Length: 211
Image 1 (tube, rainbow, N blue to C red):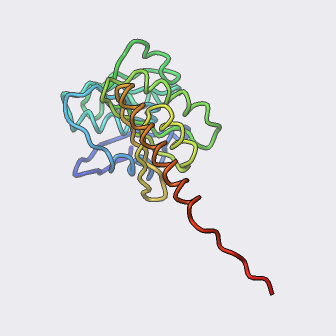
Image 2: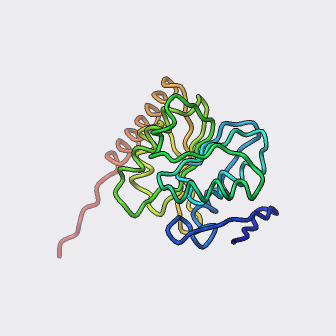
């Protein structure tokens, strides 16, 4: 049995060596939670829930949230169900390969600490499906050890992304916006890029002295 004390809340969890993160609250997830801005009454998805800290913590703090937790691993799902019961909350917990069992559902907030030591296929599916199944104005938070690919993918999918470096991790935040607003933001960024390029091209080139 593991006790996690976080933000003045003490929660009890059973963990397993084969389920992320067996030693307790990992630094990446903690960094993501530190950046989280949320409120009560949202439809929340803990995507890749592990032993269940994120979804269970949010369910204890925001009792009117409708929390859904999914993981592809059967052991993770079993632990999350036991841990939810142990901490007296009742989120929906499903064994699902990403969004496979969530067809037709819409969420206001999606949080994920994806496996970043593998290829990008899992994260690609998470990001693309999250954009599709978020409500308009809904938010996605993601944390990884890598920056470039995730930043580019989130930006190309959502049209916007904010990145915060914290504790050796990168916390990404993206918002689902109307398509026209995405296009306007992308156009502004393109215009700014062109202006910077022209400014650079107008700068006089330095001549190298020859001896």
